[in-house]
Image (tube, rainbow, N blue to C red; front, side, top):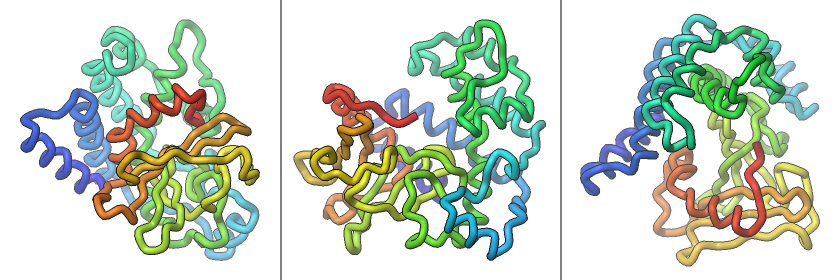
Length: 274
């Protein structure tokens, strides 16, 4: 499992360096929670026939939507509160306070709130609720539930026929990418469920722009990393080139190991796609 390999990599980094930066320390604890919860989950049954999967792929529709995403609300609520406590322990990383996360931990998740989160809509909570932080907490808590669907459905994805800017499993946006070691094909990584899918090299996954005059990329000094930018929508996407001899990547972990690239992208006037 990728999560186990990431934990091993972080442990190895800690042994070499003596300690981990607080962000990676937080990330390790979060993965430990998500991995444990993932083991508690029953194998999901999406209820999709091979014909239905083929049809949804042809129509560009994700296999799991808010309407057919099922979960144990009690387990999700417990995971949410445990996650909120962890965020509170590292509140400084999120420009917040432990008190704010303690308050958010009291939020009762409902099917309506989960559906709203899934669809990218405002959460149905009134009062002084920090929607941004609450969405981050739900994202972190719900991830093992979504990943369980990925493990069941990923082999059914028709990669050559998909090539869309959103995840074929859950419909989420990509937040990282990589160039395949064998032939340099570009793959995207889902920000929500870590699904990987094949995508065009010369196309913006966020606005479908293919105009080469408004698409470009920057390369790191050693050639291992790329920053793809689109001047049409002003979004960016990070990538690692696995053809580089020095690349030994665990793709989800690379999100955090490349934060300086995010800072550079913002300096250039680009933003991540939410």
